[in-house]
Image 1 (cartoon, one colour):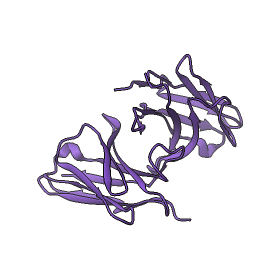
Image 2: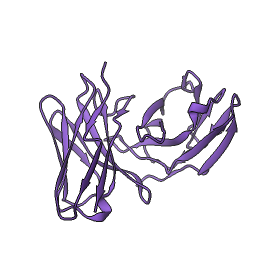
Image 3: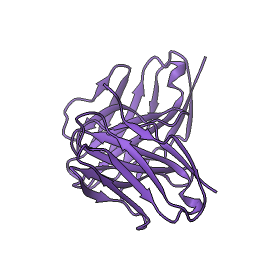
Image 4: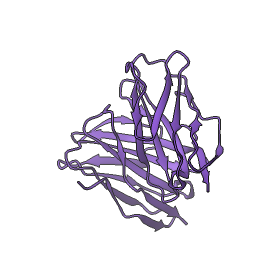
Length: 113
Length: 114
């Protein structure tokens, strides 16, 4: 059974641009969460989606947005990129929210120059 | 926001020995979960083990076990018979709130020595 797939794995963007990252959860999983990991702030929760609805959102500016499609695949978008957005973006999938197992993808490493 | 403390930023252990990684948290929730993840240098977060706050038994998963002390709000990960491939960053992540989102500690970098 395939794991969580995040694309692309690496991305370089320029300040001011926007970017879209994709996450395909494990087959049958309907909950997807996104996290940002930086050396300074560690792992921080961005948002969670379940059945195409955002259930929860972390403390990030409105430039960070996401959505989930009917097949449970999720995308996150960052507009007007800043240097500080450079990070590893990880998504996690679980059968349902609050499940006892949450599996992560390999992440997308975004570099903003 | 919940505070998670992993007091050991770095640890070394000899191959084949056991090692304990500490984690304390300050949740006010009555019901919560506690996850441990391993992150090798490749970046992927690998799920290791889960403990529910109402589980009576400490969780075990192969060479991984949890020393869960609910009253002390402590959930230490024990790795038995360490292997070179265990060298990685280890994160403790309790759930928070009714949405039970994961909140991560700062991690412990474990190095297994041959």
